[in-house]
Image 1: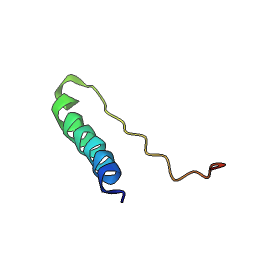
Image 2: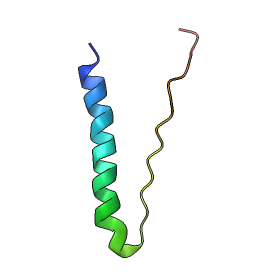
Image 3: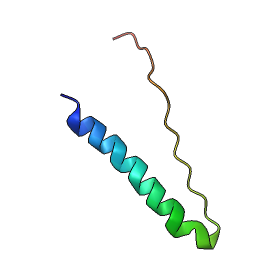
Length: 42
């Protein structure tokens, strides 16, 4: 039951890849930070 969550995470990665290519001519760098899974109290 995590389809929507996973799809949204992939969408963020995809737009970052697109921006990286589109903004390169202006010297603008795009960085996406994807932290690993984290244990919580819950």
